[in-house]
Amino acid sequence: MINKINSKINEKKDEIIKFTLELVKELSETPPGNETGVARLIKRQAKIWGLPEPRILSAKKNRPNLILTLKGKKSGKVLILNGHIDTKPIGNASDWKIIDPYNPEIIESKLYGLGATDMKGGVAAILAAAMAINQCNISFDGDILLLFAADEEGGGTYGVKVIIESGIKGDAMIIAEPSGENMDFDALALACKGAVLGKIVVHGTQMHSSLSDRGNCINASVKMAEVLVEFSRNLKSNLHYKPHPLYPNGPTINPGVILEGGVFYGVVPGIASFAFDLRIIPGMTLKDVKKDIEDFLNNLMKKDKDLHVELVLEKRINYWAPAIEISREHPLVESCIKAARDVVGLEPKLIGAPFATDGVFFVKAGVDMQIIPSFGPGLIKLAHGPDEYVNVEAILDAAKIFAIASIDYLKS
Image (cartoon, rainbow, N blue to C red):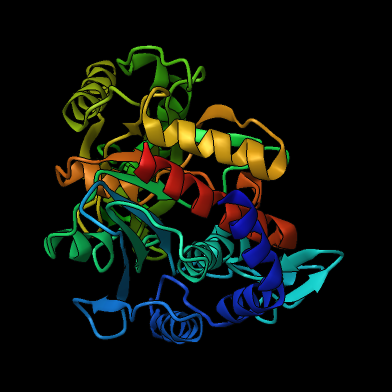
């Protein structure tokens, strides 16, 4: 089985890489959010490779999700291979020094372009894995579902939320997010962090700025700056969580990701705020984090009678998601490790991914499924940055690993 899959993917190498280049060139930035072009390419390539036609699910016309099912010879477990088809926005294009980010190129066996690592290389590998299984006529029990989700970078409202509401279920899932730390496939994530997103709002006294030195004036922006410094320096020591072997540094706190305040010249600010992005580890809950932050703010107000501050959770998007974890003993983890050894001769280190993935939204919605939150081509450190690339060989290796691991898991 392994030799057949490897041979088929090697035979289709040029087609797989050409398909990846097309995916990267097709813009799908969130925001604003439009994955229709990428969906069209996936549907077209599935047809070229003789795969079943993907089913489209969408709550908004330009935010399609695709589901493609390979049926086994009889009923059994359901394995999902997942990848998101949107990317982050380009940001500052001038920071890209090697290529124009909107025109992907292969340079020295590296495929450069926006979304190459995160995660269109993984998306191409998933479809190529299905092609190899199908064209090699490899038998298996159960089903393999390819799930290509929109809106992962925007919180999943038009992506995984729509998929879950359609009733999609599975026994286990591999999410093909980039997992390499120093080289491709040197790490497999057993866990990924969740998130709590919110704002710290500080209230002051809005008044004419010419009167600010006459007393009874509280500048909300100044007070907000003081709270921001305290939050940055001391919040972590006030959070309650149990140490986790995959996250020795605990949760990650990012204060001041957005700053707001003030009206215009001539006006003392009466309200100011900073947003925070708190990445939580397994075992932490929204309820506990919310209480810890509120207790922290209350203690600041006790020390400063002029301080009036409140926590506001970010309701415009998915403002929280749980951290998730799969056991090292789960059969899918063993299947992935074995496949990596067979394909690249490397046993991946088991890590906790520093970022969240679509898996957190399945768990948040109560879907009973075991999830490997990140195991795919690309290096973690290249995601969301300029000169993003994925190694060409890693795309092909990922396709082989996904195909071999899928069959091994479904036969286990």
